[in-house]
Amino acid sequence: MTAFTPDANDNRDMPSLRYPVICIDGPSGAGKGTVTWRLAQALGYQLLDSGALYRIVGLKAFEAGLLDTEGKQSIDEAALLALTKSLQIVFEPNSESGRIDIIVNGGKIGEQVRNETVGGYASQVAVYPKVRQALLKLQQDMATQSGLVADGRDMGTVVFPDADVKVYLTASAKARAERRVTQLLKAGQTADFDAILTTIKARDERDENREAAPSKPAEDALVLDSSNLDADAVYELVKRHCQDKGICFKQ
Image (cartoon, rainbow, N blue to C red; front, side):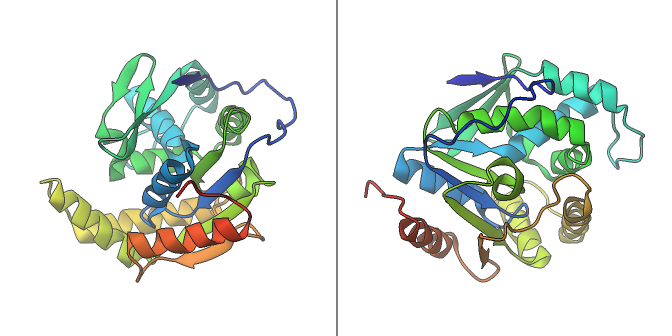
C-alpha cells in the first residue's frame, strides 16, 4: 500500500524507468480497465488508474463547490490546485472485485467515483495544466517502484513517453454507451442510453481538443478498435503485442 501526494512545485526531471512500463490509453468505455487489470495480474505489476486520479480531483472539486454538474461555473484554478495538492491518495488492489480500491485522505471512495457524472467532473478539471502537472510527478514515481501497467489518456504521450509498450484502445461512442448501459443495468441501476451517449461525446470533445495533453495515440502506439471485440480478444491482442516487445509473462 503506497500513499501518494501530488506536488506541483517539484520540477525535477522525470525519473529513469528502472522497470517495464506498459501504457494503455484511450477513451472511457473502450475496455482499458479490464485489460490493464488482467495484464497487471498476469505480470505481477503495479497498476496505475490515472483516470481515477482526475476523477478524485473532480469529485472533491465538486464537493468543495468549485464546479457544478454541467461545468458552467467558472473554476478558481488556484483553489483547484490547492485542493489537488492537499489530497493523500492510496491505491489498494482488490482481487475479489478486480478493481483498485481508492482511499483519499483516510476515507475509502466508493463506486460513485466511476460513474458518468464524476467522469464529467474529471474531464472538466483535466483541462487545467497546473492540475495535470501536480499529478504528473505522482504518476511517474510509480514507475520507479516496480513494473507498471498504466491506464489513461496521455500515459504514452506525456507521462511515460519512453514506455516499453504503448497501446491506444478505442471504440465508437455508440459501442461505449451500450457497454455502459449494460453495466448499469447489471448493477440494478437505471440507464438512459441517449443521455449517456451525449455525455460520452461531450467528454471526447473536451479530451481530444484540450490544450493540455489532448487524448490521442502516441506515434509508436498499437491502435486497437474494440467496438466489435470482447474483453478476451482485446486482452490476447494486447498480450501478444507486449510479448513482441519483450515483456515476459509468468503464464
